Image (cartoon, rainbow, N blue to C red; front, top):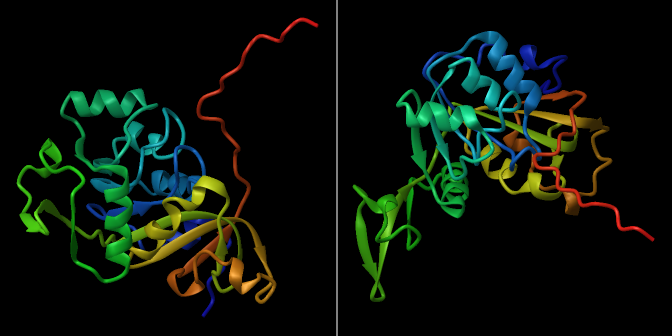
Length: 234
């Protein structure tokens, strides 16, 4: 099966439709599928539900899909660093399903593993628990959370071979692997495609069986928050 495509637009061809659900990898601005996000903007797909830890920043990452009003709903755990996200939510233009971070990661992992739901103590007694089934286990209360199964997963890896076996770097490994597994189709962008067999099997973070389409591209290395201090005089 040919998995390597020439561009993000080619890799997404035939996969996008209005009203779809997309699981997007990334943590802050680390490991975000920026080329695929840009291609979705160009495609004009609208009324999208996006499951992602956060929504990028103004003018970058998922932030560009917020600016173009292509996202109808966000399923997220962190909504900071994006003024447009805040503005749309507070004005009622954007629907938000807020998740504790670990719960969101587990919802993606569960969906990818074929688990329709799981019980967790996180969120019990808060607004997160409203409307959800409660159950007692060993004297403690848990709430039922549903696994996420997306129409499409878009993720970014550091490197991969031609079959999609992938390696992630640093915090990009937090959400990219579970996001990749929970989509009916997974499209992945990487910084480098290496020959099949050149990756140490013990170092592979995501098996290629989860990856359907693959592209290589150049990526912008952005710093989400730059913190500096004055140089100390000698």
